[in-house]
Image 1 (cartoon, helix red, strand yellow):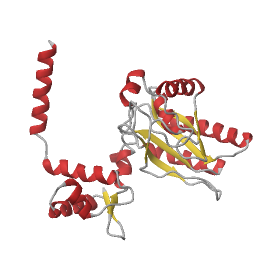
Image 2 (cartoon, rainbow, N blue to C red):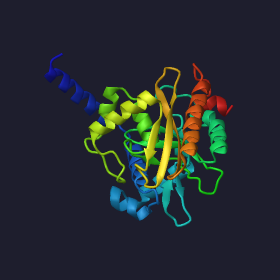
Image 3 (cartoon, rainbow, N blue to C red):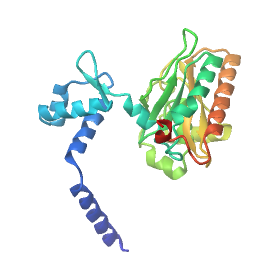
Image 4 (tube, rainbow, N blue to C red):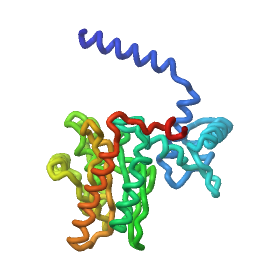
Length: 279
């Protein structure tokens, strides 16, 4: 097929897809997309102004989304994303879509947190961001903890770099932006330097963050591969900077071990499906 014919066919297919969209669902996604940018919450009035949709329509959309747990109304009468989205996101995996990874990994996260005293989190790739699908608190008073549902940049942080390191060259080219934002003086903002860092991570089998996203916060991350060997998630342990060498080594080794244990529990043919779990 010639380039012109292929382009014309693609345009025809795109037009057909546009004609068969459902406006109500498009508006619902607009609402969720705006709430994603407002982790502190937003008001009905703001949604009306930003999305240019009648107030009654916004009100009905929010009521429907609220009834399914996709949004939550706060005590201040603002709206935030609901926890149901975390449950849905936990089942979106590159190689094992029907595995409840959060359910499978939680016992390992609990043991890791108890052993190190630090908080830990499980992160997956999701359309240009690293998304935390599970987070546990640590047991000591200065332990750090991730936030379920939090979206993080792909180039800054141990878990994010670990996920990038698991991609093929073409996949990496597709997700990396042309410019990398700087969050701290330690953030890698040069693409060539980042690619070299990812090569080191693949070779050593873990990622190290020395305050790239949050100054004063260090972290180790290890890959959780599926049965096909491809990375489906990253397990990471964040902790305050300044830890002694022996302490850092303990955290690094424990993170790698826990990630391997999670991977070993992923069935060759996924059986922990939502329908089965719910009986």
